[in-house]
Length: 394
Image (cartoon, rainbow, N blue to C red):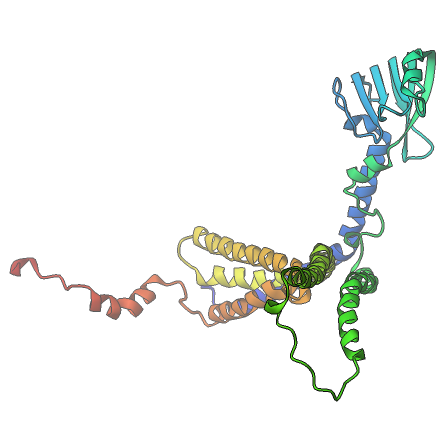
């Protein structure tokens, strides 16, 4: 309206968006992985220093491997103070039994973070040393109890910590690495996958090759080969023996393949996840530029309807991008689509559309002019619609 071309308006914005896309790449490549690594380490420290957050007062818990624990009350600034402590060491009926009851207790930091230090006050230790003893001797053995004023107990909580951090490696996870570091991880992953897949395929190949080698070793003979036995001519017992032998060999090969199918699928899924994560570090930066071209062009073309219509169309386009992104991701994880291609398909689909709609905006196309489409379809509508008769002639 002011006589300024759309290209002159869009060019500074395009440069700004390109600069922001570069910043997004730097964040995705350097800052976000570092923050994720620190977040996981922070979670590790929280679980180690404040183990009481995993416990519920008055409820038996078995989160600590090998023990059943109950605390009547948990209080204190960090939940380190306890009342009514009941601790039972899990064991079979034929092993030594141990139960500890204390009025009070508290958690304390241990030197090794994989262990939980529990200091108990004013309690009893009940033990039954019955391991390896015959039943009659166990019946005669009296219960043993020891009173204590204070007792220090250490629990191995390495499994609890691993579960709290989703069993992820704090330093070596691919989500904590830059683009180039993920390249190195992929190289190591490929070598590991080759070894694991070879070990999976080796038993099946060996069994198959045994039959092939047996056939190859058979020496040719000039004698007239007798017609092979027809299985229907064999006796019933012999016939069942031959059929069962053939079935057993085929079933063994099939079982070997089926048992390894899950392992192969997990290997492929993990590899493709790493590839797609790496490629999205770059592809999402280009997605920002594509969305700018689409959004700016839509705002220029749609001049009626205020903010409503452009926002609705933009949301529809984003939903298409999101659904397409998830679809190709799931297909790639199943190994049915190259992960490098899958990470870029949403951009490949939307980029031609962004160029086309930008061209339409620069040429001042009436792309969303309803009257234009009415005029286009008017001959077709008139052909199938009955002309209205004037009221005077009805």
